[in-house]
Image (cartoon, rainbow, N blue to C red):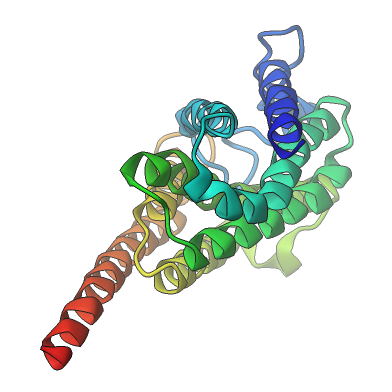
Length: 262
């Protein structure tokens, strides 16, 4: 039943992605909700090409759904624990797209926050259990790591879009100030994920990808904000460095333990 539920949820998410891309007759996300989520809507909105990462994530999610049906008894307990957050993430993904498509931008905010929460849950499950091999690590840990890192950036961009559409003007502080603050917060979240995940690469790749495209959009587009671009680049560098250090320390610990017991 777990395998079937995940497979059906993956199909729902992929169908939702086609609707959100405009390929199935829907309005592209950047144009839906009166353009509230376009690359120039807020100072923290990533450039259009950034959303190409969804193709990689969806391929990974489909691979994960298929992976469930292969005979691997060693992974059964791990995947049983992952089943609920994985399924919820797929359904919330589709729900977010539909809420934007139907013009309920305000509804997209609690949905994407919930999506971020269940992905954090999945990340904890994966961090506390070990993959059976490199392929399992690539398909499962890699996919949900990319998913989490990107949704961290997407949540920030979505929140800014919802507040702007609701008439919030940032207490008069201006786009530059809020762009710097939000980019810095996204960087801090990336640092937290890197430390708690012992240097997992996938979340850093997607979060860095998103922040890099925020920087590109703020340097070349209708809404220019050099301070935001500089902060986004700086945050990306910090997250990458912390990830590498955390990964190195995670590798040193077993070697140090082996030396002590030798």
